[in-house]
Length: 501
Image (cartoon, rainbow, N blue to C red; front, side, top):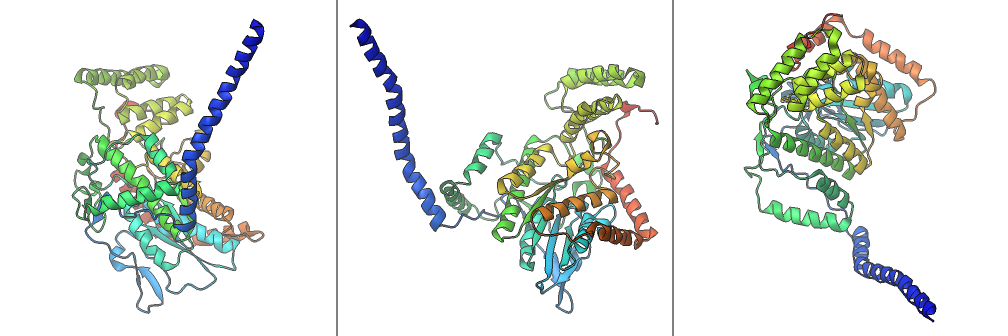
């Protein structure tokens, strides 16, 4: 009898978790069902909220069109007042049915510096397309502006939408820290909250509520909000001024704001293109890691005076060691880095030491850290690369990873001077590599269907292009490269003390 009662109680106890689960699941469905019904109704009856494309961080003292009608009115051409920053480009005012029009936006890399548009990836891409799809009329329009950052490209994209684009290519990220802006009002938000917010925007209920409350907040502030920096009509890079480097100092709030601003600009430009039903390709820009020392280094803000002195002693001891004791150099430098892990020059030298002994994975790690701690960051930061990848994934747009492409062709998988002429600008061969990658992306998108034996035709077109360029073109490019290196490369740290190979 006792055994029977125990079995009965055990049976009742076993049934409780099932009833408990069913009760709570039912309650969850009762609460969730109205939300699901509302989400379906909103998706069917209400268009998706439009992203507020007004830049909350900067405004401009004046905006000028990039293109203007020529004297005949039959073509658009680069406006004369924009030629200090852009190269001459033109396209027909009326696009015929055969024409496929591509606008490529970015900075000096897109323009082809230190050379020019004639050897930029936009030109090689057009030759690829001419060879692969001769039945179409391909227009590849270079909108690369010297020192232009993403916040200056967004208004240009808005203008370009008026010219019947068929594709945008966006290659940006290196110029975000060139101009002076204020982000002190921006509060630091944990990355998990940013990711959660972006994920929830896919829900119509959340996105509609967010658009409503954002709109109410916007009405309370006018365009003259002092929290927005007013920038001049054209770029005024701090490095263009005498002793411009002295204006750069460690400012974590400014850096956070710049990264956040960059991510928002990417999202806004992708949103613009998608709302206009124009496909877009994003690029993850290439940066020279191995052969580009940091432009400016400073000790970390939490390092005491005694710790700085100790770091200096360790660096000097490492400098005095010969390369026959490379491991001794590394041991001393790692002690210094343990004290101050934010000195970009120190991190870079440690990377060079690891490269010297053939431990290239570790070298690359330190090179990346050095780039990200550069007080004058003229190379895209890793957090900004994350924003490019995240935007491409969330918005389901193609991404051409130029950094990975260059690394795959580089010795020891570290991007250096073989493909990059300075800190960020690819060689002519590098531009060809980028053009091929962009062409492959277009092929994957179904925008071009190559004809048979098109590579042979492409190679001949490439050869014709190169033979059309005279020595003067290359001399001008070499002169620009020299000026760029003086302007941007910085000084190789003395403690390397490397012998000539």
